[in-house]
Length: 114
Length: 113
Image 1 (cartoon, rainbow over the protein chains, first blue to last red):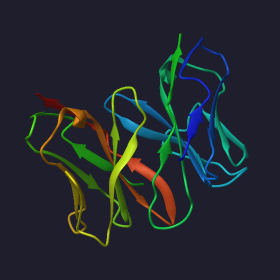
Image 2: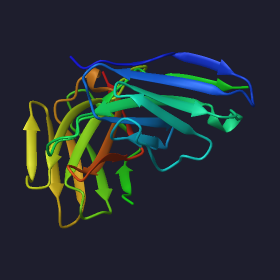
Image 3: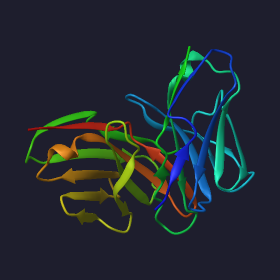
């Protein structure tokens, strides 16, 4: 059973703080993704990684960076949090093989920036 | 890049009736179309998917249809039940060349008892 975990369910930070969101998966998946979810906008891709040390920008990377030092862990970093980064953040992972592409999601981190 | 549009944004149905959600995509190279269900406070989970070489797929009360020519695909839920109340997302991607999913904006389905 695939398990994707995220370091916090709820997080409150102040404007300008550096914020780290951690994601860990235990199924040896090559691919990992960070999304933010906002009402009416669906899931928007921030960054993704297909391998250790590899990272690529998604659709809304501005204000974010990522780190993937180990295969099972993918971290999202907000260098200087702003109020418009208040959102639900979802991590996901998937296998890099085959023609099917199921992504397994973590429980999400609801971040509030004051 | 890929653009996925999803309609309607909200859908209210009487228990036992059918629900239909429609999505269109822009990139003709997309070949994999999953549907995710997200219950309130829970993570999104895959409920059904379809590849571009198939026109229709069914799994009990849910079915997905794909029209490659028109670049649209739909989710059909028959005999709706209260537990079908959730947000549903369609998505598109191009495995094995590209594993990113482009999601629609979501449809909030409410099943009235």
